[in-house]
Image 1: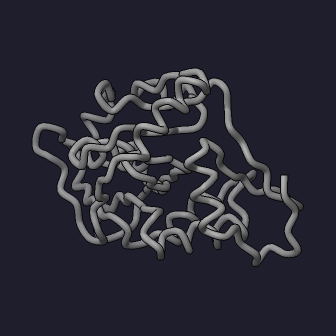
Image 2: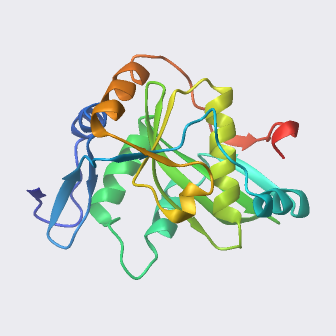
Length: 209
């Protein structure tokens, strides 16, 4: 754990990226930043992502629009709007800086011209570390997760880290693996060079709608 003098401080980008390469990530608190490396570790295997029937119906029923990296800070602040949150100003400042440097990305679900939900995370090589997601419209965060997986599959990413599994994420195929296995996969993934889409709209592949 590391203390900081005020909520307007931030974690230097090089420290954050080094931590991710080691399988470690931070979470904010009232007085200090805590660092975690869970065992077991939650991942969603990109080759066995499951699309729940309810989400398939939602994809077909609504006029969702997917955008990438157009409202990164707003996505983060929306993720933080809950009764208890680890996304304090230090964490927010840190990841906004990572985004400016091209290492953090948001996937956004829009409906009728309004931001309806989304998620954000960090990229190192061919590994994507999902951090948090939110919704203002039912199913909007699920649509964003589905879009993220489509992006990662299409761009040849090798690892989608979700930190911890939850019952909510298990419906999409999330599993637990040991820290040892995770670090082996992580080491291989961060060596690869892939590109995340730049800012703008993203169209879901027809077969994934």
